[in-house]
Length: 447
Ligand SMILES: Nc1ncnc2c1ncn2[C@@H]1O[C@H](COP(=O)(O)OP(=O)(O)OP(=O)(O)O)[C@@H](O)[C@H]1O
Ligand SMILES: [Mg+2]
Image (cartoon, rainbow, N blue to C red; front, side, top):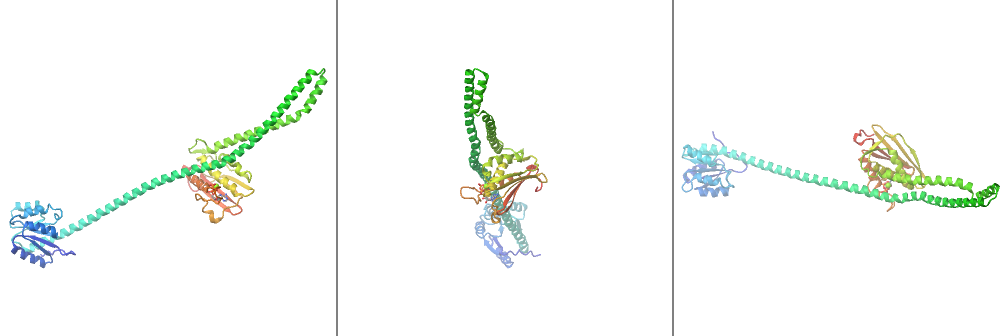
């Protein structure tokens, strides 16, 4: 049966290395007739250089040649990386097994015996060319796979690098956010310090004046006492002492002093209490030394915040409280107070002359609570509504608003697992509602 060589796109090339031109001529003609390209070499040395130059698909190699024999030629072929994978078929008259074994050991893929049976040679060449074609395809596929693996590895490495970069960016953002939070807090503290100073200055002012008045009263009382002493020393009877005492009492307005001292003391005590309350509110507001999540009373937070921002509000707005029943909420209290402060200050700033700020609180469903701060201020035009939470967005004059209040409040509420909702109508007012889970770790549903 004729075994036809494969029909690859390129004509396969066979290198025949044989020192007997007569043998070669017949074989070469036959193979060429069967669509193969033939290159001939007449000794081992020539065979090696042709193989390297032509890169044939298969080598037919005679064993018995003068000079370098077929075995040596094959050994050198297999040492040259450029050509070592070209299949070699020995042609030999030697049929003893030791030579056949030696040929295979040197890397030959097959052997044919002389005198040559042309059809047999053709069949074997066909088989090995097919094998070689398959081998080449496999190598190409392997190469492609290798490249694919390499590309994938590169992509994975790139991804890893991107994720490392992202992590570091997130860390940097986090840090920037913390800094922003801190600087906003400092800015608001600075802004509020003036207001608080004013708040404290008021009671201190009248305490000072009261003490001055008390000093005068005490001087008068001592003078009266001295006059009474004199009268008692000089008087000869009891009527005279009583008359002098009544006179001194009337001159010193003792009855008036008695009443006024009571009022002065009451006012002064109130003043002192006001200062004490402000200091307490400052402490509560900042929750000094408290960086942990704790269960807190939001009403207490609202009250201490109101005390702090009192100066911003009191000239413009009446505060109405409509508090519901609230369970303790697990939170970072000082940060929530900052949210309430931003909302209250915004509400006061939205009121141009006089208005009302209403604070409502209530228990939602599924373990949620809400705090609502409504004002009767200017309202928010619809076209800027979706920008008010953007950092640095402000409609206030340059230098008066940083535009960070709402964006930071949004971040804080988000950190608590909650959300802020806004309803507003121009010239009527706005309502900001903060929804919070009672326990952010157990929060379910939207509340
Ligand atoms: N209650 C409100 N009524 C009307 N407009 C409001 C109200 N609250 C916020 N806004 C609008 O949203 C903008 C952004 O508010 P945000 O608190 O973030 O910044 P700001 O008040 O302008 O500046 P900052 O709070 O940093 O001093 C305000 O400039 C204002 O236009
Ligand atoms: Mg603000």
